Length: 255
Image: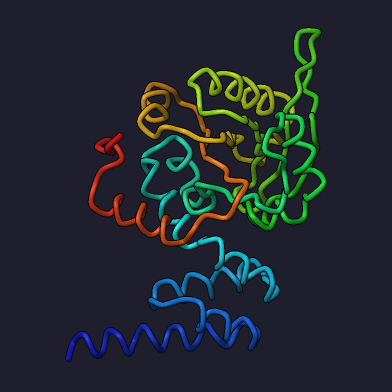
């Protein structure tokens, strides 16, 4: 009986949320998702981001729900970012799906950067509509020298600058040093007094979670490290990874 009432209560909450989205989005959620938790997630996401039916369908098809849960499982919640900005933990994903870039088999970091710039609307849909684009190859000047950030964003919800660095290979610990340097420059020279400290996003073609953890353990870096994929991932694979993280700590992953 208790289980019946809990299920009924959850269904009533979902029903109330459904009145806040379009009929088409309503049908998409009902037809493309299974659990109550997943339905609530996409309904709330659709309300928050004001998704069109096409935008919502893409997020469901790319496994946003599973990727969101994977990102939570992959990174410890007691990082410097989440300590100062608790809401940041639900904002970043891992991996990011960039199938819309239509990149060739072999490409450079510059090619990746230009493709993102050319498809900026879709890129912001993938990373979140609260991100506002500030510039490409954004110049920061210090001690008579110029440095260039691949892409610079501002996040309205976090109220902070978000420099984004792109790598076409696997994560290396030294990549953090460069991004930490940019974070310091931005906070000292561009951040407004009422804004929060900058948060970095390092997008790599691949990463070893254990290496990332070692690299982050002794640093106060407010950086998120994530993978990106240039092709759609089978949702079954995402679910398998999620099931793995449900049962094992990221520190105990089998190689």
